[in-house]
Image 1: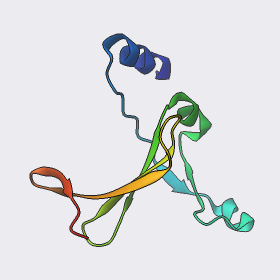
Image 2: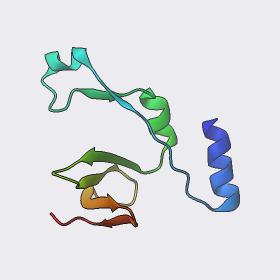
Image 3: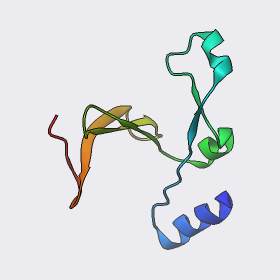
Image 4: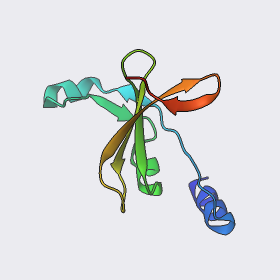
Length: 92
């Protein structure tokens, strides 16, 4: 499936977004990780992705998008909110 998505992206010059649910990793607590979560898709989705963005809840209605793995962009984050009109700048 991943190779099909990559072929579509290259053939039609479009971006393909893949989501990967995170789950608690009970064994990670023993290694003193700051965030003991792991992706359900494992390393397969990570290796098939060019740029990886983590989405998480911020304060109130704010959300945070953090680029944490990209070949041509530095690690960075942006705060945003979602309204009835779509994605908007966060008030916080």
